[in-house]
Image (cartoon, rainbow, N blue to C red; front, top):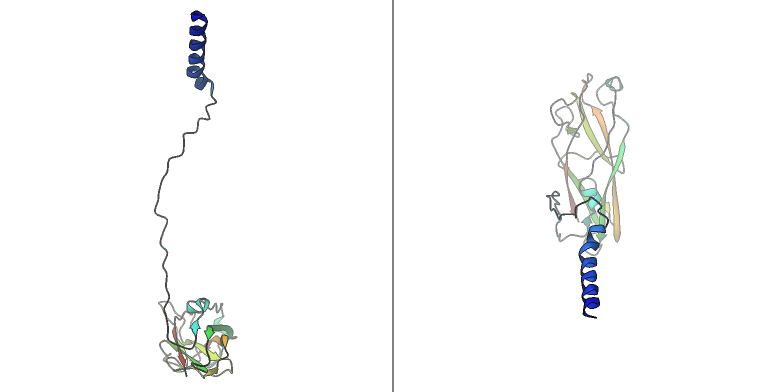
Length: 186
């Protein structure tokens, strides 16, 4: 009986020791945890004491003007088609203010003080950016636009951008302008 018991113990021990040798080897090492730098997230915002907040989609936007041929500008004052854009205001409280005006800050063109000078090396010459409000009135650089009546809640202030020749002769180049805008409530 002792021999039988000893034989059973040895057989069991051998099975435990030998079994892992028959396990399937996948050839893939166990994954190692690795941490890498993924980038940066910038959070921007502000808390304002005003009638409305500027919608985040309006805060930093790009208006694509497109390409225009020099031949489209045959004399001073020729203007491209107008490209619409808007400034959206959120959560407006008309008990605080009932009107809003937008001021687009930028450098006035030497050839047309009511338009914005193009920026950057390689800019087209004798061409400027013109901004008009929803009633087609020019928005002068650094001056508030015509006030627009606010409604409770969401508001959209509509504008148009176009290129205008400031001389009879235009030279090709880029047509880029960056403006910062401010909202004046009254």
